[in-house]
Image (spheres, rainbow, N blue to C red):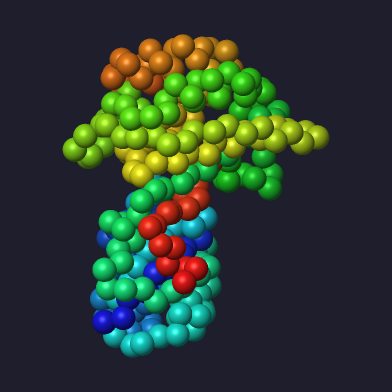
Length: 256
């Protein structure tokens, strides 16, 4: 059966997350339903990461197996036709070898978190960023973020319901950018690792926001990490500012 890699862009609002659920809409369910319109029957796709409810995708990667030998461009166009009422789009498609797996072949995941500081309510970015009222100290946040780089036990920064066998992960990048505009300041957190724990990125950002606000110091980030205790974590920020921004593979399936 021919296998295809799909690059998926989606707005997380209105979905109960990526993973298929019986009683709630999901991104996976929407794509599988579209595939069933092209080739009747049940379809199961696998993705590089299972994003939570409200989290967005800029470049999620999934793969599917089909009976027909599709031209990748025509497959993406056909899927987008059936997804036209959903906030989901296939932005790229490629034929891949049978041993390609969207999840297990991945070597890194990249996330973006958007935080906007402004007094007035968000309009254009409502549902697409986390809003706080006061500007933050980006230098302090980066100093705190630097304490997390490397291989650590991240128990403090994972959800209590996380099902990962081990809390040990290697964090390759946690970079904070500041973008000033006339009425607001946007802080973008760029996070990169091979794999993540449940709520790890949102826990990072929620705690770093406290550093930026002056309620915590960069040294407190070190103490929180070393505590290996969920109680030492700052507040977990809301999901609407989080985006799965990219997935890295030994060979990019979309550039061949």
